[in-house]
Image 1 (cartoon, protein in one colour):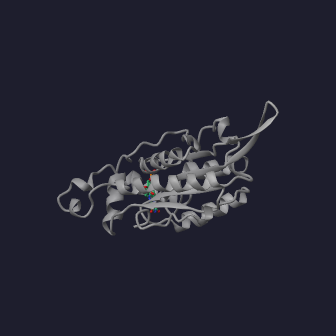
Image 2 (cartoon, rainbow, N blue to C red):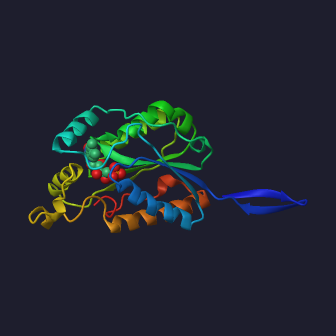
Image 3 (tube, protein in one colour):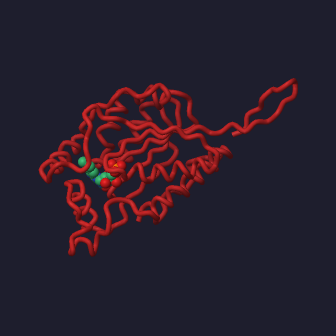
Length: 239
Ligand SMILES: Cc1cc2nc3c(=O)[nH]c(=O)nc-3n(C[C@H](O)[C@H](O)[C@H](O)COP(=O)(O)O)c2cc1C
């Protein structure tokens, strides 16, 4: 982004760094993992990045206490439970070239803290802003995406593209593995499950892909080229 500045009567050309707000919620650290690498990619292109987390008023601790609590959360979140969050700092309402709204899928929808934030602050945050959602999920993100895009557009945002990272394991191991890990177990350590499921969440290769996404996004912001034309649907992100 190029801006003209006046200095001692001469017009000089100054590079203005694009500014990005990363607004996120992460329960089990997976969104944070890809977000950190994407941020590094953006910064490698000189982009200024501000990161703000949504804080539930009643903290939710990973993992859940038991299988029962995990099932209960799955059911509650299926009905798009709003999880009240603390006030956002003023900086979130400043002017940004792009807001990346990042978080996990919960029962085919955005997570409770994100839904709460959209209800309370959506218009103030996103009106006339460009918003790029980043979804971290086990593998089922489409309903989340359609619902979120709708809500953002109702708030007055433009939504030019989407970044999704889904867990890289095959079914049914992925679903069973995520459920057990959320319930506090370690399926990767079991002799049987461990053969099909080596770790919970995103792989290092996916986090490296997030870095590359940050790089191409940073280039697009610097050159003022459309973000809608960037390809984020790669086999690494969506295996
Ligand atoms: C309550 C709950 C419901 C979930 N429902 C889905 C789902 O519907 N689809 C999906 O792909 N993943 C689902 N997941 C898995 C998370 O989206 C996935 O593990 C994600 O990577 C977690 O990101 P985070 O660590 O940033 O919270 C669910 C997780 C939780 C805790």
